[in-house]
Structure formats: C-alpha cells, structure tokens
Length: 314
Image 1 (cartoon, rainbow, N blue to C red):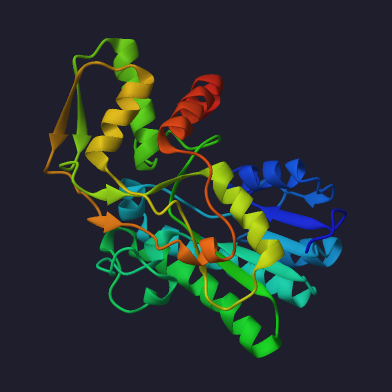
Image 2 (image 1 turned 120 degrees about the vertical axis):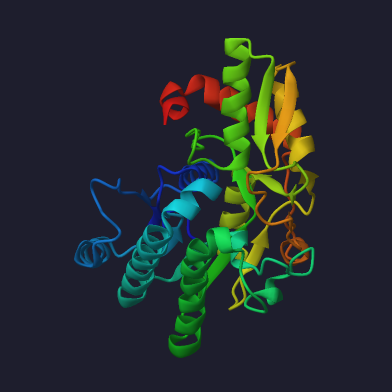
C-alpha cells in the first residue's frame, strides 16, 4: 500500500487520464504528488528524464503520458506515434528502475489486442494474432511498454504493473475536430450543430461497430486501487464490460446535448475495429467495479466541454 506521504510522480498530469489520477490521489489523501509540464520536462529527452529521476527519486510512478489521437490522427502520423510513445515510455520506465522506484504503473490502451480477438477480450489474448492496421503503430509502442515492465519484473524483481483501459472520456478530453476520439468528437459536433441550427449531421462509417466506454474518473479510481492491491506480469483490463453501437452512442450524445436534427452516415469513411469489448473479470475478482453509467458520464463530459472554452477550441 502507498503511504499517504509517499512521493508519487504522475507523468502526463495535464492529460485526461493523468489529471484524473491526480484528482483521485488528492481525494484519497495523498499529499506528495510530483508533476512536470511538457515545457518543464520533455519525456522524449533521455538525459532530462534521467536528471529528473535522479533529483526527485519518486517512490511510485503512474505513467499516463502518451501521444494520442483518433483514427485520423493515428493513420496520418504512424511513424510519429510509434517513435514518440516508444521513446517516452522507455525513458520513464528505465529511469524509474535505475532510481529505485518501488512500483510503477504503465497505462496502455485496449488497441494492443488483436483486431479479431475473441470477444470479450481477455488479457491473455495479447499477441495471439494481427493488430488493427489503423492504430498498429500506437499499439506496438504500448505493447513494448508493458512488455518492458514485465521483463524488468522477471530480470530484476521489480513490481511494475500495466493497465489497459477501454475507450475513455470525461473532463479534460480533447475535442479537436479531426484529432479527437469518437465520443468527444460527437459532443463537439452535436454541440456545434445545435448552435448553428443544422438540420442534419453526418457521421463516419455505418454506425455498426460496438464500443465500450469508461468514464475517466472510474479509471483513475481503478489505477490507484491496482497500485495498492495488484502485482503481476500480466496486464489488467480497465473497462465496464458493457458495449454500445456507435449508432446508439451517437443518438445518446444527441439526446444529452439536445440536438433534434437528422443523423446521417457516410459508409465511405472507416469504421475501425468491428468490436472491442474487454473482459473485466480480472479487475472484478480483485474487488473493483466501475461506478459511472454512460449517460451520466456524457452529461458530466458535456458540462466540462461547456465550462472549458480552451478545451473546445483545441
């Protein structure tokens, strides 16, 4: 268990996941949280990361920093996604190990699992068949990070764990019109359509893919729970175990925002993976379950969108 005064470094504290972990730690009474902005510490700069760890020597590390984006961003910048994520995570994990970090938790993504993995996806299906091509670069980087944690455990007896979240949403999300994930993109699109009085909105694909969504504060709660209650080489899935079609999700977002126009679909645009549902029985067996239902979470996210003009402009 982490002591309440233990020095805890949250990498990526300005992102959606990192900021939620900081909120959760503060809520639970942890008082010695270390953070650095990208300007203060570029995690892709090996020497800078080494110097930071030598100076601070955090006892616990939550590695939530990453270069992220939706289908469009992943497809357009394959090399960038792979390079930046690989360099960043290797720098942090290696420096944590060199400086005696007690425990590190690596945050990945459910896109690490094979495109056609049996559903719901168990942790054990990792590397059993090929990845989804549209986010292969990101997935390979994340797989490398979690494997490096596993190999450090095996070779040096460290206690480094990894968590693989499903699709996340919530406060501090990225609402960029082209480089955001599906749920924040829909929030922005329907909000603007409502404001502009548009009679119809066109969405990508045909609406058939099934997706699972988890409110980011639930993930943060699980992250702290695992840091205190789990050790092991295998990753832990983070999700709700529930899925919804993109079409139904789109209608739910429109409902929450109060958009009443017509929703059309553009089947010439990519759908992405047909189905991505995580098997969350491992987290459940450890004694953890999610709290926030999807409609409530979308409502909270929309409030955040409206109250954060800078987020909306990104």
